[in-house]
Length: 284
Image 1: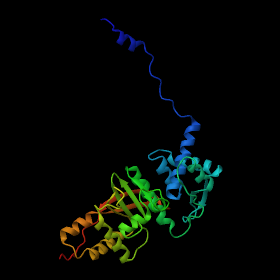
Image 2: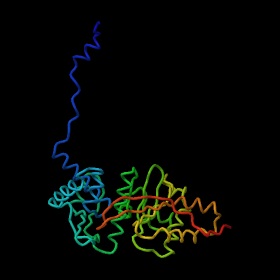
Image 3: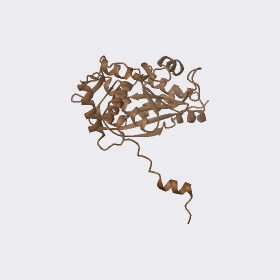
Image 4: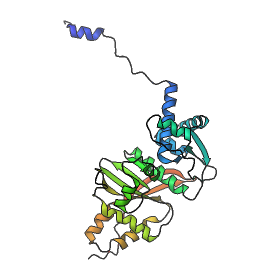
């Protein structure tokens, strides 16, 4: 067997060096940056939320989140505040924490003026945790806080002009934007009717200067609460002027996301289903 010069050269050549692995200090810096970005996106988060956002699927994700949060609090970039769960804590960005992101070209606002112990905490916490869940599925997710602070591709005003209401969150995949509403307490029927009305805009561009079209509507709620029937009732009232076929189309555009939660507000999972076709419809 004759060895060609190319083959001989390949046998004698030194193996390619392995990619340089980040040092412990570099990994710690990357972890801190991820946590700061997550808090900037949501306004306030718990360590369990940060574990899901920054270390999805990791066995010791919550311990990593706790360790990183402690370091950021010591550095003055995060501030821990007692939230509405009583014994629980949420972290917000401080002014130095926001400045740390801004020097890296990431717009951020401190969260020192955010309420984490009031009646709206549960609503915001549910929305954030569900958005983190959908990010793991490949969506880009923006809470109302992120939208209001200019972190989403469309402004709060542009979404309101098209949809007729301020959404609790928005998901984006490809050229589709999905409007999201969180039901943490019973809304009046009129408010639920406005949510159902958003389904009538599916397929339309959200703004003349944007390629995004409305892809559908998500309604997010605790699985133990009976929001599904109230939403179906509101849909029946809103869509009674449509034919049965049109009602079926509109109902298919709304997805009910049922959250399985433990105490205190512990994420267990999520199941999704299309809005059941309203009964007792009166086709034209």
